[in-house]
Image (tube, rainbow, N blue to C red):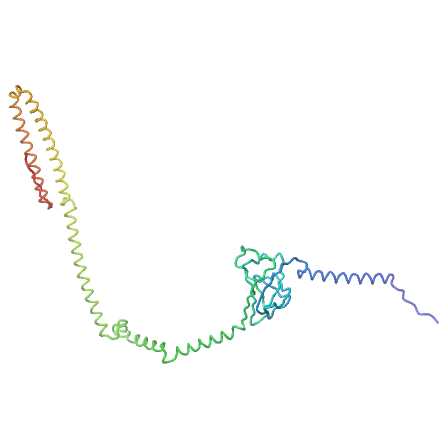
Length: 331
């Protein structure tokens, strides 16, 4: 009888199986290490404790977001002695820069979806958040606000029903408005509707007509007064007016006064000559006739100057009524 053929064994089978098992174990360990690295197990973190009155919907590993990006996760949850929930948040060191001492943390619960932990920082230039800090976690549950909103809605609907009732003040106001608008369709329009009747509106229109007539008369009087003032202004301050003529008279008066001043200077000279002549008696007799002629001439010039001044002053008084009288005394 022929023996069956035996299949030859694989060489080094145990070695190859061992290598395969070792490779499988290494792959599993590498995958676990990569998963831990991806979840930040090997990253340095900073702890933050959030204290909330209740933590319904919160679980270990729930992320904490800032502007929609996860910057931390819930690492541990426990109840404190006062019955509040303490949530320990692990924040990677590279993401701590988004949190400041003034940051606010909220736990939001919507009608749909799970709870969310969010961080808000108004000013990124504030003091950094210290390690191991404890902050309050403010909760906002939309479902808890629904009964309050329903109660407020019932109150609003009740107020609307009261306002729209036929005996309400709004209905009476609308009725009055309707009556006023009907009155505005009359001959005098809005005025008749506001005053309540065409008789009162007609009286107001008559008063307005008389007022317009009075204003027209006042306008005419104002025009006449303006004309009179214009003529007076031209008479006083215009060319060849009273002020112009007075200025010319003053100029002439100054010229005459200059002539009088010259005449007085001549008189002073003659008096000096007379004083000198009195010192020398023999010469007085010879010079009496010449001095007498000079004194007569000087008196004539002074009288002429005084007459010119009196004439000029009379002319000024005639043109402009001065408040005081001017008196000229001849020497």
